[in-house]
Length: 167
Image (cartoon, rainbow, N blue to C red; front, side):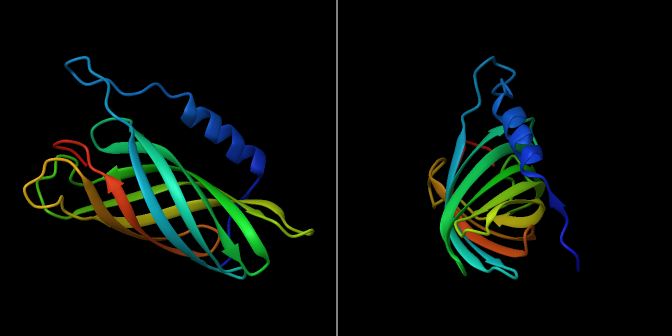
């Protein structure tokens, strides 16, 4: 299967657009909080890598969150980094089930530290499952698992900050 590559400039412009989006406002007029996450991703491609990352997302409606994930780690050629701009669609935004499936898409830029390296951009598609809140709590950190494609096959696990009564 041939990878779909995009130019780093496209990734940078998309990043600017996401970062300029205003925070969503609820019906009561209060701001929705940013949602943070910590994660570890395995990238399985011609240049495999393992990245630790941190992400921030904000609501773009009830079902959709948009965000940015920054990661760094080691690959076949040494140190490298990654940035992902994503939109995540949640099938259970109001936490009516213990486990919440979601899907998403975005763009990804991967920076290689070798002399012939540089930055390569990719389209990103993923599916995931967000776990339940800790028992007896309305807030906290919830586990998630993701699998997708974008610069190779990706598998990620992590913890995402829960938002009261929402995913």
